[in-house]
Length: 79
Image (cartoon, rainbow, N blue to C red):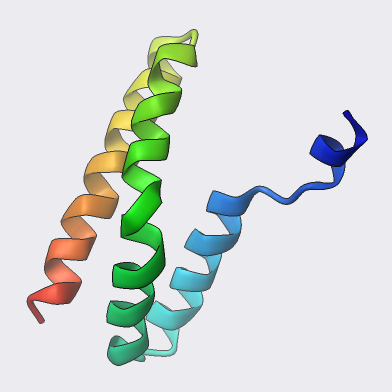
């Protein structure tokens, strides 16, 4: 499907945007972005990918990424 080829990697774009917010030290925007966007779908998306990961490396990566996003959200919200 040609659309799939042209569609961006949504999680990479959102985590890249979050990186920019972190580097700019804009904690208010970090909280807003994490609360309104990343935390609302990324953990479920990553967990949903796990059954499709064919190697232990990718299975472990998906676990790590899920736990990291949830942990980072807890840290950001509480600071």
